[in-house]
Amino acid sequence: MTAVEIPATDLVAPVRVAVLGTGAIGQDLVHKALRSPVLDCALVAGRNPESAGLRHAARLGCPTSADGVDAILAAERFAVVFDATSAAAHAEHRRLLEPLGTLLVDLTPSKLGRMVVPTVTGVPECADISLVSCGGQAAVPVAHALAGRYRVEYLEAVSTVASTIAGRATRINLDEYVATTRQALSEFTGVRDTKAILNISPAVPPATFRTAVRAIVPGAEVEEVRAAVSTAAKAVRTFAPGYEVLGCTVTGDRVVVSVEVTANSDVLPHYAGNLDIINAAAILAAEQHAGRLARSARTGVHR
Image (tube, rainbow, N blue to C red):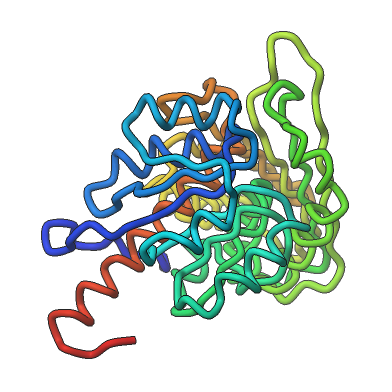
């Protein structure tokens, strides 16, 4: 069963959203928001007035500011703010934006908000949601599917990203990435013994984003494992179409599942599936929030 709920977009009026951060994640978020029928990208905010991200957003017709979170605080209220900065910065952004009642979608591994993996959790009604990490978005659906069928004794998620797409914030947040991804693996499976690893590959041509989930699963049956993994992957593809299972093997009690994510993006290279999957989850969360706001408006119930 999938926790994804796709909004009825023909019944939802566009809601104002802001993108905080102008790196590769922020630039792709802008494009994905512009493609959405229910999101109005009303502000892109950064800190460097000369950043390529701000110039790119301006060319697309989006209002921009180099005043960072202050620009968001000074503007008309936004329904959703995407935080594509850093784990350290998110804590301050959360403190400042909390009184506004805005949905804050955290794309950093800060681990402060409620963790969300769309096909596992849906999008809960809360003020600050954490999208865990790119590796978490790729690994948790598979890990959750295994834990739903078997008693899993150990889980490990090893992700590989191209060095050309691993920006400054990613490198600064490596410790937070590992801790947050491990926590998500445990929280959504009940497995206490977990490990998360991120490899930044300098390979030429750049390596396409991949995640291997390794598990110790007593009693695992190969056909049942493959069916569970296939169902989980199909659910993820409803919002991240580049998500594919490359391999699924069962050797005794050892299960290895390898997934690859290619980017479905106007600005990212095909190998940047790590950014694409977390951004696709962010857009889905915003669209589901827009659907809730529309239903509240129709029923006269204000949240």
